[in-house]
Image 1 (cartoon, helix red, strand yellow):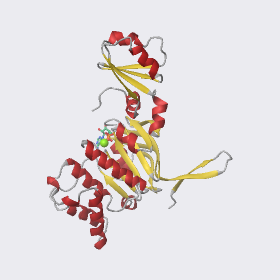
Image 2 (cartoon, helix red, strand yellow):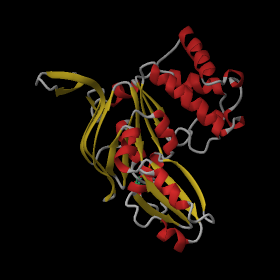
Image 3 (tube, helix red, strand yellow):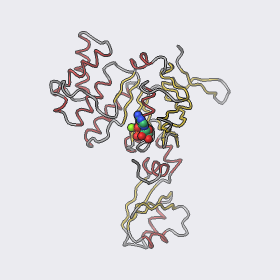
Image 4 (cartoon, protein in one colour):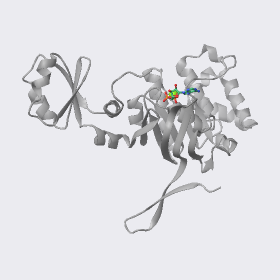
Length: 321
Ligand SMILES: Nc1ncnc2c1ncn2[C@@H]1O[C@H](COP(=O)(O)OP(=O)(O)O)[C@@H](O)[C@H]1O
Ligand SMILES: [Mg+2]
């Protein structure tokens, strides 16, 4: 079957291939008993690089990944992975994908090494190569000294590292990670980020979901933000920040009536109040800071805007499930 090739016309009108597309979704839909979870999303995920699917809890991230993995039938639209339709080529597709599910599902009664060996067998891998591959992966995820430990003896971070090692056993082209660092401490998160970057630099395609904006900003080349099953914006992290928010934000605490009048006459300041904090977004940091000198009692912290500001602007401040 033909692989998808994205083509576009350059200025002179000649058609040039842009990239292989690993995943193509058109008007992808999923509902559960009539309740929509994914409401018609389009995705084009190019080969190589890290693609992020972002959204608050319940946005439809896991549901989308499960359809891509052939674990959940589509309610509508079309979906190809490696140019193959998921509903007809699920075995071929799964052979070429590595999966890190949202919840660790390693077998607690087996050792680290046994878990990897079981997975190798599932992919039909056998012989001396498997032992070598397992050793390499244990080294890669810094688990070599844990090879004989049972899963129930591992910390959350170790289990997650094992799940990532396991996802690599079949040397996949596409690695799908559902919230790979949720609940982990900062050291483990950084270690995992480094490994994911390494895999990306080796030419793998990474598709990850996260609700950590710092993670997305650090790792992803391209991002789709979904909310309530719909795409609300898409692009590289830096571009999304430029497109949706000002360059800097002042986070101010203190007397709301003082803050309210502080920036009068400065049209470049947009104020959002969340609880006791006023977020004052501006492209003219110097002017805003100058105004702040009039109210020395206020407590203020200022910083460049991040993807988190984009996320909050687009998905709102109300709490999700
Ligand atoms: N198996 C299921 N049966 C019924 N509803 C589901 C099922 N899986 C997910 N949902 C619902 O679909 C919506 C999207 O869920 P999910 O894809 O898990 O979101 P996310 O991964 O972005 O947090 C939620 O409202 C969730 O309750
Ligand atoms: Mg999820």
